[in-house]
Length: 169
Ligand code: PCA
Image 1 (cartoon, rainbow, N blue to C red):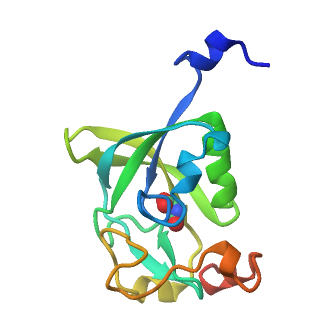
Image 2: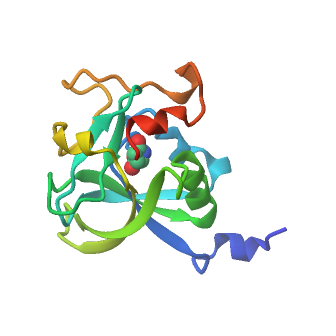
């Protein structure tokens, strides 16, 4: 049992996570960040990656991926959340870090203040070469005019990781 004063205090470790895909507000996995049983997440602000990265939609399920290829693509737009240990652990489960996406420290710039912050971002490493021939987005929306509708896990024929081979070597 955690002591009440500990639960309320800000001495518990917190983490800045930059989300650019289905975890953003209005996107299909945002509820992960708002469900209280997952832990705590506070919205900090909208931001862009300091470096350019390729953000693509790929796989049979039209999933957004930022590729670990700095310098190519756009300064990706996303949202920074200040999360606790529990929420970070939940996000790692959702993204299957480190077997699928890999959570890395990079820099982002807050749109309001211009402040530069170190953030965690879920990137795809060891991606298939065709991924860098796809259109690069600056900002992901699941119902954007790209027309590539995201298929949620519960709607997939097989909810397992077989499709990883669509995008990973
Ligand atoms: N979820 C994570 C990575 C890609 C995705 O769909 C995010 O929104 O940042």
